[in-house]
Image (cartoon, rainbow over the protein chains, first blue to last red):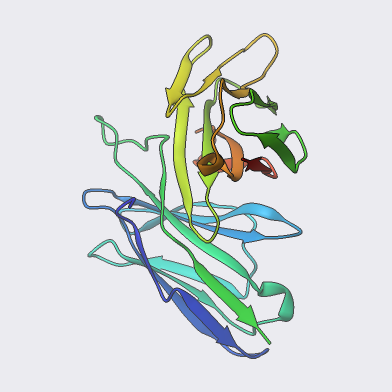
Length: 117
Length: 114
């Protein structure tokens, strides 16, 4: 158990709908990362937040957005869903470094499996 | 940009066989290197890491050495068990120009048969 929690575990929805995935980082971790794992694209970084602020963006579609709340949990919002959005979505967190910077080791949650029908 | 290339699977080995999964990387600067493992139906677990050249990461009998001259981080285990069956991902972390992401290889599926 990494200490990162994600809900829900499974989500089944229809095309055109909107869903929200939730992540709670490990205690003390300030950074949250979102990744998408699909068969054709592999593991792709989507976005990172650090202490409530967006820090880095990867291959995140404009239909997707995220935020990190004051209690450090994060939500990933996926809208106008398409069949191709079906994937495993992972959240990871990392501890701040001794100087408050971002450390390299990320701990992953169990993932949310999204199925778009 | 940064990238990771790892050997395509699947890899099937008999129990107690020697395992090597090749991983090479392309990156500017000096990234940290990782191996993650994903057991069936689960998330990614950190297996081992190395943060600078010639560092050796090790855990649960697995080892990998950061080779800067060959830009490689091959994963090895001397004697695999059925319980090692999983997908293994090589990854690099490079913090520069505001980017703090892990870049993953495509994963190598390992099946160990009794």
